[in-house]
Length: 528
Image (cartoon, rainbow, N blue to C red; front, top):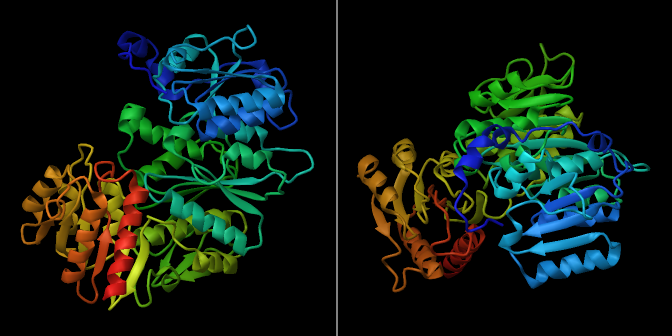
């Protein structure tokens, strides 16, 4: 949706304050829009982007009678077909496609727009956003819109259990969903995963809970969201190009705590998350609840008592008692193995969100036991001869790879890809002692090789890209890496594919890379 024009530096500087915070403007019409039955009819809306979220926003707002113009820099037959479908069904939808329409907001029904609803990935310094700031037209994201539609007559109002973080979001939201379903609750995963959140609201299913995964992009465009309970799992430098700085990235992540009703949950091993809770403007009575995988839980915390996950927060006699929730074996990737530290942290965060919603401790344990890790996220894809084969293709940066590597004491590591300019020195220095061998894939690997030479010179490394005829053939490279790993791995080792790099140099995306690894492992184990 971007244009090919150079950024207007002077204009961006003039709007710097608005870019940082997405200001809230006084608007009596928008102030009324706080439930499904509010007067949405004839509201003049520009929807920016016709991707998954923009499509859903257009559909739902059109059903409610809003007048909509969709703008998108990409002109495709599929997008035009969707606009035609809605225009024929509702009569109040128009689409404008191509980069020339991404320079300023168009009129809606011949008048000034009253609202912009943007797709989450549109940068806050995009020309269309600058135009909205300068004209004082309010900008919402799909999450803000969904929150305002949340209350529907004749249906229960879902409680939102919201989570964000740099890594672990999708795994944790899956754990929350599993626990809620183990408790017999009507729940669904939404937000940055699963069904578009506005479609979940529009669904006639009587949902009691939403397990909501939120990205920093989505949070930037929210301001009235009021989670029942919220958590920031962890925080590390990421998406600085979009946010403008690490501090702005953290500030947008911290929005998840604003207006929280019952519990703001933080990771005591990430001090920034505590600071976020301390600075949040919450609903009176909301509690600060910590969790830790490295220390005995104090009062108002969840944590570990030896190998038992316990709750000392959500019970009346928390000064003298604790609820047992699960044991570490429940989270183990394979029999006799210990779960990774980040897996325990994710489980504690999920447990805290669910306990804040008064989910029975036994249901928490049952849900965690039944949860299966999603594809490409620390996913066990093979186990034979006491060797685990783990697919963490989603680990596209050093911080994510660090979390994964921390869980395994003895590694044959498959790593590399498109580095995006990151540094690997800290990662290699932290894990040099657990590396038995490194198999390098990808084509942009100079920084990784340099870090290995500087911080783990004793570890054998193998260039698997150089081992095949075509360096762009990711499947061949992965097959060679898995075959070499099978030669090198010994009982007790984990063969971990956590590349700490993006995938697009040899694969379409991280999922294709993960599938290539899983398929190669399956073939290798079938032949062994």
